[in-house]
Length: 156
Picture 1 (spheres, rainbow, N blue to C red):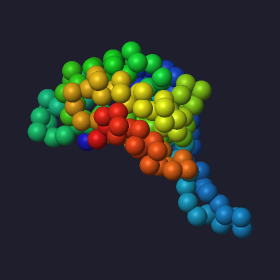
Picture 2: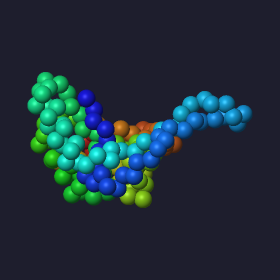
Picture 3: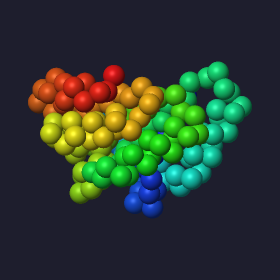
Picture 4: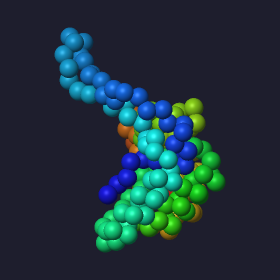
């Protein structure tokens, strides 16, 4: 199970509806959907309690925490440590979300900046004792640049 991307402070997430919008071509024909969904707006403590319960009820199943944070080393260390305390088996770091609050350097805003990305991946991998992989944004000119930065700083 991969839990919905979460952050320490869910109050910064303002959920909107509808969450999907039609993508139209120049002739007005629908050819796809846009997803406006944000990270979880559920309190971090609730998410932790539910992850702990999942591991207690299904100890042999894999539980992956998808996490996103601001450019703040202490916050990254806290979210990693607290998730590991409840028994998560791995981490998916969300560097891909295009609506990941760019004013806070979250999500895609972090994933597009190789220097910032590398520094944060280093913090994360110094704190984590479980496998970590970076979920990268495709909204870059060359995906190998941020991917290399994540790999060089300890991500799987």
